[in-house]
Length: 146
Image 1 (tube, one colour):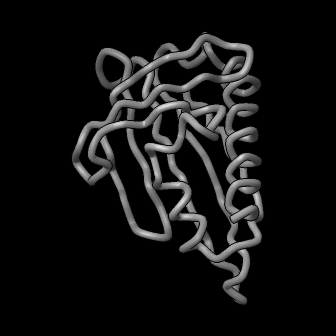
Image 2 (cartoon, one colour; image 1 turned 30 degrees about the vertical axis):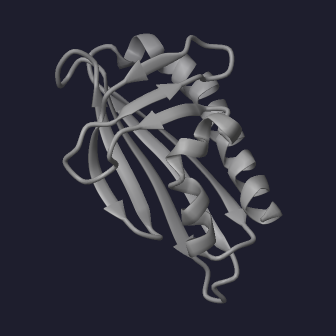
């Protein structure tokens, strides 16, 4: 069983400007309503610590492994509860430059899989998705105000 949450937003800035804000992880507590803390060395193969606060749901902290870090394009990580196959989440933050390079499409998505996913499906599709949307909106506001 798997569930995928996808959101996207158009930001009026080039990918370099969006990337600078998105990867300033130390500033997350100041603006990010969903990922309220992200610490550690965000490099492929490293484990980081991520604290999330989905609206209307319990906050949680987990230690995913960074799978990709491609400047101005993508960062992704894989988190697992206990061990693989119980409750896994592959989270991706992607930037796509539009042809004029003055706007960027920001996509945030996560594929959840594992035996516990059916028990959390509604929460993922409602609270988690709402958290993604809130983060996307705040990112847009912050980048466009700079």
